[in-house]
Image 1 (cartoon, rainbow, N blue to C red):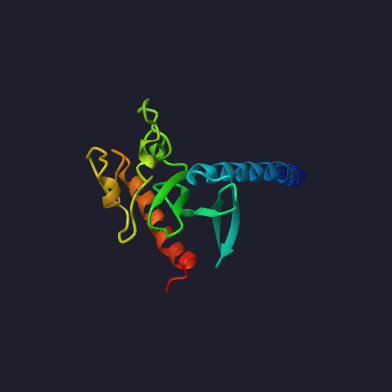
Image 2: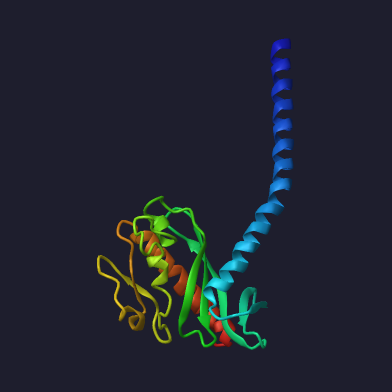
Length: 199
């Protein structure tokens, strides 16, 4: 009986100590993680909004819009985050567009934990030494004024895909490719209405 009581006390103390250590580490690392995420986002805004000198953040109906400005403070373009589920992780993507939201300027994957060597190609393809960012670069210049983005499989990337609002899916990672397309389409549809005050 005494042995059982001692064991319970030891286990309880161990659990409490472990909890305190984890709480301490969380308090120490959380601000660092948040600061890093903010820096990544800041750099990504410059990546997806070409030609800007600065940007402001405007919140409309709960959505943060990153308003890219030139040296004179004139608003040139806009970016927003598109978030949704991929094949096995949450995907967070920054989408840069013109002010009419008819053309995608560029996208940047901010967060993903997809299947290594397959789904991770949405961000970078280590097998393509000359153009490791070929997948996400397909979104730059897509004309989507009257259509949603679609994807094709097992076809070469063509220049005319821009006018068709079409991208080529990653071989072996169609689900991740489709997830990126769906997440961006949903975000554009929702945010276009908010930003342009439609419907």
